[in-house]
Length: 313
Image (tube, rainbow, N blue to C red; front, side):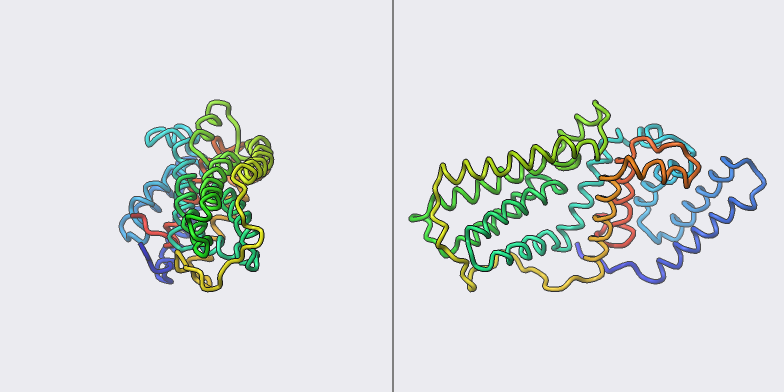
């Protein structure tokens, strides 16, 4: 669902509400914890009354703000909604949706494929790589569903009956690439987060296990498929008049750039969570933020809605 980018009016109301609530910490005569609780209550009340952001997003922001203000620990703040691991999924899905709705997934795929310069084999290998990379942040099923039409579109110039093995190689290659890529990150596949919640593995720590598996298994799988099917692709070229399976934007707008910035910052915070957690916690007078990856995911989900990158619905 398309939405307009965040308006100046909404920005002004958000800033004024935040500044007013923040100033209350300076002049309220109560204890620090009490002042923070009252300031949060007033901020939420203003946001609910003005509906400057969807009331559901405001409700989701309450536990996150409570954590940063030191009013409550992460698990008690989120357990009334769901286990923190569920919020890790939720944030990952929100980021994936922000990329998909704004066409950034297809934009990235086509930009990378353009590097092949007409060589079909190179284009297909790049397609497998992009599929694996995208599936690290998007669900394996959604990635495969998006990339298979692109792969089939590349083969439109080859008659199916004479090139069955080429089609099988591409489709299975995309399928396996999405599954393998999903092993690389904590949010790449639901089983990853379930395991991490039991073993208490952070996003950064998972990369040390997941990325070597992807780096080793992906090329081995593609090599096996290539020699198993032996598709004749070496001399084939991509037709410039080949069918486009999706309309791809040539330039990026404000929402697309906002989605990229939020996605990049989220990935940065996830990858360096061990280093960032104590620094960020120190700014709020805390020792450490528990379940930091889930807090980052929820913050990202809130931001994509606040900036109208995607609608809440």
